[in-house]
Length: 122
Image 1 (spheres, rainbow, N blue to C red):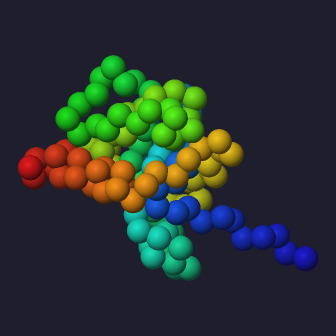
Image 2: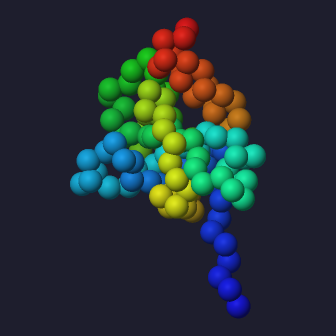
C-alpha cells in the first residue's frame, strides 16, 4: 500500500516554513496561505503565496495586521507582515498544528488590502 499523498495547504490556513530571507538560525515561523485554492490544490502547481507572521507585535507598521492568539490558535499575538509577502514551494511547508485556526475570507482580504499599502497603492 502506498503512503497517502501530502495534505495540500488551503487559503487562510497557517502553516510553518523556513523563509529564504530569514537567517538560518531563526528556524520555522508561521505563515498564512493567501493564494487561492485553485492554485494551492492544482496538481501541477508547486508553490503558494504566503504572508509571514511575527511575534514582534510592538513593531506594528502600516502594512502589518495584528492577529490575536485567540483568532489564530497560536501561543502569542502575531503581526501579519504583508510587506514581506512571498512565494514558497509547497515542499518547504510544514502542516499546521492541531490548535491553529483558519483565517476567514474577509481577514485574508484585509491582508490583500494591506499588500496594496505595502506597495504604496493607497
